[in-house]
Amino acid sequence: MEFIKQIERLQLMNKLIREQRTGSPEALAERLGVSRRQLYVYLEYLKDMGLDIQFSRRLNSFVFACEKQVYIDWRFEVLTSKDAKEFVGGLATFSNYSYVNHYLPQ
Image 1 (cartoon, one colour):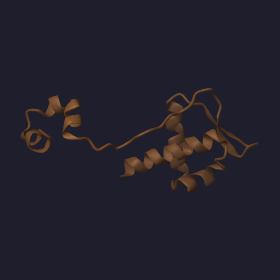
Image 2: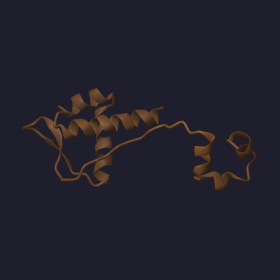
Image 3: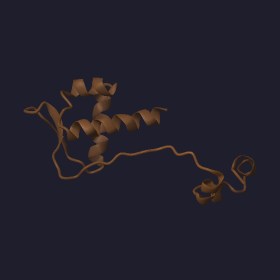
Image 4: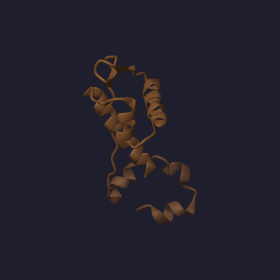
């Protein structure tokens, strides 16, 4: 579940930066439930993706200093047997293993 928590943190951080209401780095870290150091790891990750994020003292908020936007999405979907057969990702790789035949819908 840590993966989901990280996605949720990035989504909230993105929203707050877009709305220019993150508050101080300490306040944002507390709101996200991470340390200040971890906050900067998340910010560095977004910067590595090509976003220019800066802290505005005037606004007391992190802001996007570029025209780029971030779209973060994930979802879980329950598939019927018919739908599952349309997905081949990884199936060819594992088709020689017996558990594929036992656990995948036929």
